[in-house]
Amino acid sequence: MKKGCYFVNTARGPLVDYPALTQALKSGHLRGAALDTFGVEPVPADWELLRLDNVTLTPHIAGASARTIKFAAAAVAEEVRRFLAGEPPLNPC
Image (cartoon, rainbow, N blue to C red):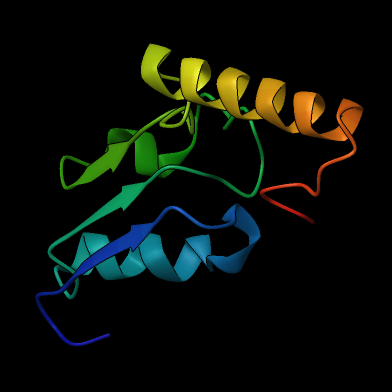
């Protein structure tokens, strides 16, 4: 990555080379990082990224809001209703 960039990962934890990320953050090559998922969960208490001021870590629960849960429940209920009525699904997998 270019010098001064921010690294953001909300995808999959194993995609990240954590030793390289840590070095890039400590050296100042990267300005900061935001991570929402990790290669190992829960992260070890002695994980170096936990101690860096230019890192923000979140617990990978962004989708667990009350609004999201209500929306998901309503969507599932509608799919069940459609199935029982012999109608095609709105969101086929």
